[in-house]
Image 1: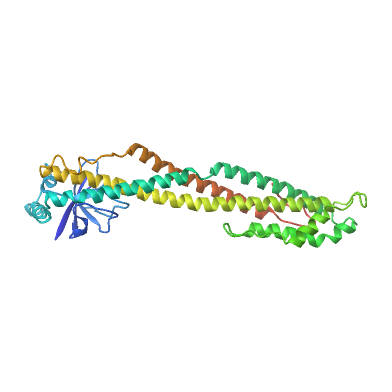
Image 2 (image 1 turned 90 degrees about the horizontal axis):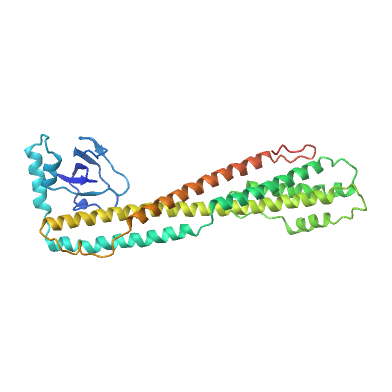
Length: 340
């Protein structure tokens, strides 16, 4: 046995007996539809088997729908008889139909309330552009300090005792910087050991009068500064990563809630149409107050989806820059790293 439905008010469709769809759909469509006839606005063709995604607008078809969709087209008596039989078998009382109104309204109101919360949460998130500017500034400073350190390390063969004494320290700081760059986003950033930090600070306090040409204090300062900027850069990146996951989840939920509201509104209209067909012109559906501001809802749905796309684009760009910097940071005691 088949059931017959109208999809999106543009396609008359059939499906094998699935009473869970009647009298209209709530949620996603689990069963494929076979298109029987279409109107001009339909994206489908007759005899096409389709599986609409999201929350389709689907209601049970009537014999009047069949006559409308097949106006000027040949239609078999068997098909008309089958749709008339469906009309009789699925007929509900006015009382039963009216009882559906509160649940539809509750679904629509609940979706709108949570949708508003999603939009509010998205609105207070930091600007991806601001976070991008902060990250790029930190990486620029780290690059400057890494080049400066490399240039000074390149003269390590000069006979400065303090330079030789602290070569192990400098290697440890460089490895710490590489360690930060290798840490997956979202994980805890590795810090310099307190003993290393203390030794590095002490190296900056060497009296210049002991060896006026000794670059040890400047190297220590440059490496520590590079490490500090890389750690701060990583923190901004991690916040962006976490925020990006948050906004992506909000956008997904808001899209689903938006579809729920659209489907509930359509079902509300379909229910009102069914009641009016039964002679009920003033009923629980038509008289229900508090209409929705659909224009604002549509704008908010578009905004949060755009924000999610922007956040992902910014994060992708910074991750690439992060990886590029890591690849170019070729620490060497005899060569200046090629950092552009």
